[in-house]
Length: 438
Image (cartoon, rainbow, N blue to C red; front, side, top):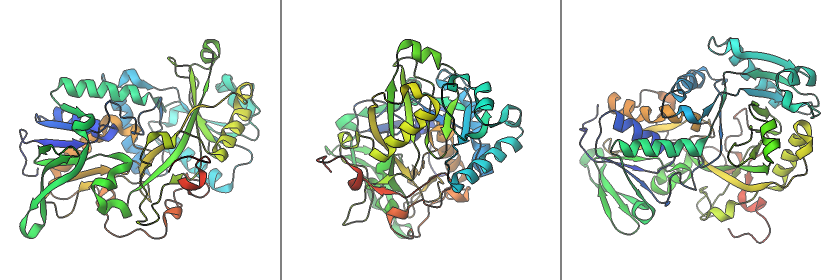
C-alpha cells in the first residue's frame, strides 16, 4: 500500500456514482477521515449521469475482461445496500430489419459472449421474428417488430440509478463519511506543493469560496467535468452526451408493462419497464453521441448550465418514434417529456481511467472514463481505488493506466471505432434548439 494511514484525510471530489462508491469502499476498508465534496446541493447531483431513473446492467461484452467484471458487479447488486434497486428483468437485445451491417455484427458478438459464458448460458434464448419474441416478451405483441432478431438474456436487467445513489450516500454517511455540498463542496482546484525530483504533491483542495480542505490523498471523480481539475486529461477524456426522454403512462398502462425486459434495438435505441413511482417510460436513442468542443482550446466540456441540455435532438426523436412504432405503437405519438442530454466522461476505447496522476507522488487518483458503461459497476467501482492503494505506485490493470499520448484526430471522430456506436459524433452547437444559449 502507498504510504497512507487509515486516519489520514482523504478528499473525494464528486458525489456521483464513482465518487460515492469510492467513499463507501474506503470506509469499509477502515479509512475514517473521508470527505466527499460535491458542488450541487443534493445527492445525487443533478449533473451526474447517474441522476436518472434507470441504467442497463448487462453482463455480456465483446471483451471478456468487462464481462467477468460485470458478473462480479451483478453479484454485488444482490447484496443488502444495492438489492432494493436492482431489477433482474432480462435484456432483449435485437436489431431491426433495417439495421446496418455494423449493428448486426456487434449484436452477433454480444450474443456469442452471452451464449458462451457459463453464468449466462442457461439464461439466453435466441429469438428470430415477432412470434418468437412475443412468446417471451408478450408486452410487445402490438408492435410490428419488423425484421427483428436477436436474443433474450434473463441474467441481465437494470438498476434504479438515482435511488441507488441515495442509498449509498445514506450508508456512507452512517459509516462516518462527511459530505459537503453546494458552495462548501464546489472545488476550484487542487493545492500542490513542491515534491522535489518526483514533481508536485497534493496537500488538499480549495473551494471556489476560498476554503481549504487538507488531504493526504485526493480522488477526483468529477464525471464529464474531470478535465477542469485535471487539464492533462483533456486530450484523453472527452465530455460526451447521449439523449434521453420519457413517455408518461397511465397507471394501467404502466402495470401492463411491468416486468418486461430492457428492450434494445441496436440501430434505434432502448427502453425500460415503466418506473413504478412516476409511471415514466424512459427511452434512449442510439448513435455516436454529442461533444461540446471549445473552438479555442479544442476541449469538450459539458455546457455550463443544466438548462442548456434540456432537449432531445430531432434525429434522436425520430429514432424514438420509430422504436415506439416497432414495439409499442399505441404510444408512438405521445409527447416526449423530460428530455435531456446526459453528459459522461468518454475515452476513445471505452476503457476506464483509474490511476495516479503522474508526477504527483501518488497523492492524486483520477477515477474517470465511464464511457457509458460505468454505472453497472457501481457496487464494486470503489474497490478499484482500494485495490490501487494496495498495489502501490502502479495500476496493475494496464488498460486502466494513465495514458499520456495525445489522441489522434478531432473530437468529431472521437470513439468512432467503438462497435456499439453507430453514425458520426455531432457537435452540441449544431443540434441545439434555435435561440438556445451556449
